[in-house]
Length: 105
Length: 343
Image 1 (tube, each protein chain N blue to C red):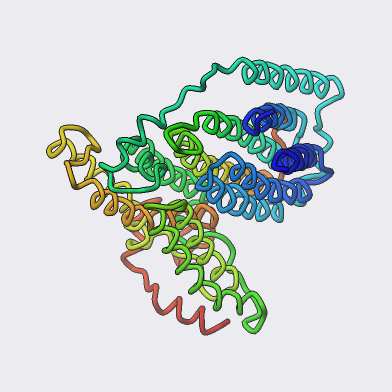
Image 2: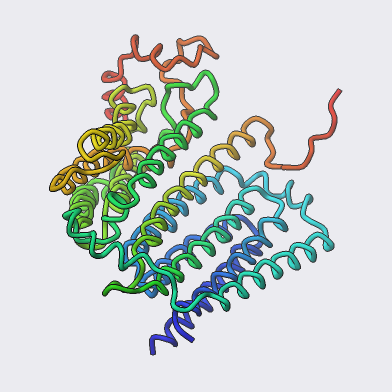
């Protein structure tokens, strides 16, 4: 099996693992970590496709690789916004619960 | 030999991913995620993406890991309460089934990929000499797909506005995060004095080398941001006031210059973000030099979080969120020097 196929299949498993954690873990921070795992799976799959596109003397297709750099930076920015949102949630409600709050009246 | 190495990396990667998802508490999960990010950098090396590997190690593992570790520290008390809300066995089974289904569909897709693989490399390589840069990835980022890079820089600024908008009204324009205090004779303060000069040189080298070798402004900006964070955490400098004009100028300078060069292209090359013949390299350099401070500042400020400390206790709580208002009466210098004198 070639390196790119091996990593492409690994990426598929990473997406599945992340998706499971996103649903099964109740704490928002755990969901965020799981979502990042899922995202990294998508990145690795894309990177494996870039490796398959090796041509013209390059070891990999540079276009998807450049987009991956963009993607990693944007994923970090989104994670930072989510962490800030989460900390604000805890600051204002003293809880990280995502469950429906009990009706107050 | 290389296959065995790849196999070991794959097994470790899958094990760590599972570990972070099922680990007992959030700290273990985040610790696993940091290691996972570093391992992922190895995957990128094996996939011939050195530039991506540098970005992953710096941002994916480093910055994201540090951000999540910081969050874990402040979330400790909330874990037990949410544990009770855990999904039931039925939901877990369904989630596992769904995850298996998605993985299965993706595997089918991978196995049915077209042969030979589609690639843009034969188009990119002959056009590269016209841009004057030797690293094809830099060429893609700043010439062939410059629009993506421009939008990305704007996304970073918008993300920062998003983070800042979580500030309570009274803290608007103030300094983000806690005031770090560390032993001024301790190892952290020592490192924060010794490492930044080296880090700044390495960061600028990566930036400059990015034209022809792996590296570039993102990796460079991350190192510069990390050096700034180090100085902050050692208590040698406070986080910046978010209503500082110079800081805000630094945040927007990159996208503004990028857009200006893009509009210039409309007149000189007939297309937005087009470069006139022979001017590609200097214009790319102008954009990169303008983007570097923006990226470094924004990455560090995203790590810092929303403004949390009002700069003056005298201000009425809930003062209007007008960014300029506090700046007028501010006396930044005296406050800072007294801060530094106190540590």
